[in-house]
Figure 1: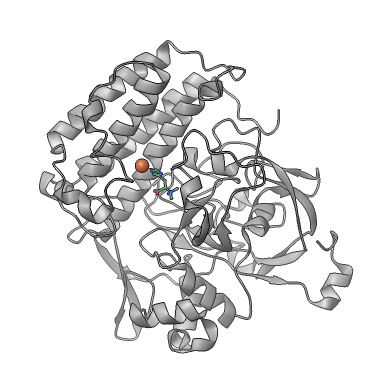
Figure 2: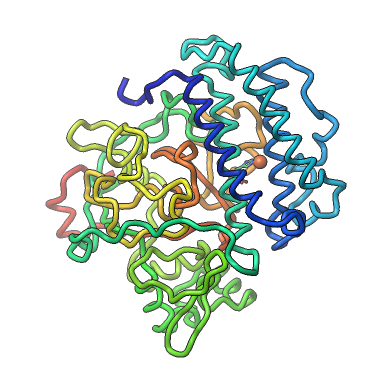
Length: 452
Ligand code: AVJ
Ligand code: FE
């Protein structure tokens, strides 16, 4: 089964849960207890809330639901219910303290491992929650997603650096000579999945979508190109912005990506406690959807739709099939993509040639989330599973879809079908973008693939 990851589901679940917990440990043990309980930004929870919330969701789904056990602290459910308390209100709650929260998540994990060791995770299991170990994969993805959220909290926190990681590999020799854009063929392709065992409800079901052939940037938009937009007065020219974007850029007094500031005639940025020159050849990160959309219009281009992005990332013209990743069906390795907080920054544009898509596009997976032009909407045949609050309550025009994951995203929560979403004003997430354009009439007459 080409669209199916190999390996024993229980072993895969165990490895994914362990990897997520290792990351949670690095993110929560690297700061003082005062830092853990502090709110570093009203946009974020105190780290100690994320920590206990991870444990609470795990006891809810793995210990109580999958394991049919009483659980560890069901009395805590209300404190760690994300829908009951907005992030800004969480510091005022009677939360578990750092030591209590650590003990709580460890106790839950003990029970989880006991449940996992005695449960049937067969890919043919009649219960959808257990089939292929889905609910364990779902919770590993949940913890990994909070690992990314906690990393964003670290980036917002002031003070000296507490996290460290090696720099990403330097750009390969051919990076400077890559074509500016690549052609993605038109015609039908399979979007979404009905076979990926740990896909979340919003990625289902597989369905056919047609796109017209289009040109896509080979690599994400870099800091250097984005600085050209700033230098050209992009933030002061309403021609490039949607009406809502133009209102927002003025209300929020935006002049550059979040964390950038001016130092004489150069841009500097704060990155996990380090202050450094903004590297021109790295994908831009910490821009909102309005900024991405405005840049694209200034460049005479547009953001890709979500379907275009997925076709570029998954469609293999040689076989006519949609694959799990741009490079094929193999799980991401360090040679394919910058994922998993292995590096605490995007790699230079043009990196990861082994992760390239058939079109030649690079870095579709990893480095930076990529804003698309699309609103977050259900696929035809969508059914909420296992709970409405994961995706369904967010469908609608107020959220824009991001694709591809970022350096802060664990591979378990990243694949060609994975969908992320956020408000178009959000900048603390690790989001950048690439641009697209339609074919000219002349190009369209000779392009492969049929018009949609
Ligand atoms: C998919 C990243 C938008 O963080 O709000 C975490 C993931 N859902 N806990 C979020 C999530 C419940 C979600 N995003
Ligand atoms: Fe959560």
